[in-house]
Length: 167
Image 1 (tube, rainbow, N blue to C red):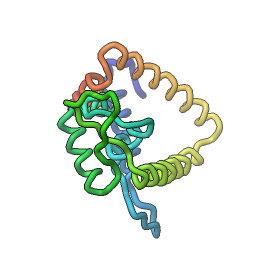
Image 2 (cartoon, rainbow, N blue to C red):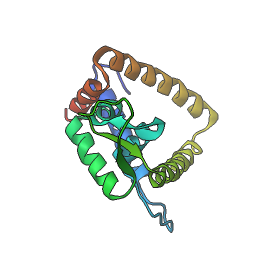
Image 3 (tube, rainbow, N blue to C red):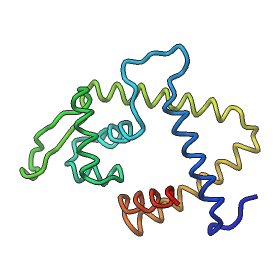
């Protein structure tokens, strides 16, 4: 049985759930071959660029990683033709901006749909009582994440959560 938030079992259970979800979302369904298989960080990066070009520092903030990590991610996505550097009218000339390409948008949408289908397969295994309990718990957890992000900022919250994973 899980105890109060200071009980490490609760944090471990959440991290175990995340690891299981990461494996589920990364798995290539049997018999399905896709042109592009995006990692979770790549998908997060493309999603962040979905509303328009971002400077590297903005992208890092939107994805909760260091600028150097965002830069490496963009380099790989750029080699794959999924993002491209762009000039932004009125943008700071000292900053490098990137935008999602049409191929990147297509890959992101395809990958998002595939991930959603895999999650739905798991949710279908729950009974209605399980759905209600999960939904209530997810709302509470989402509110807690949002509160932490407001207090310390998205990137710092990611660092705090990464530190909790290593405990």
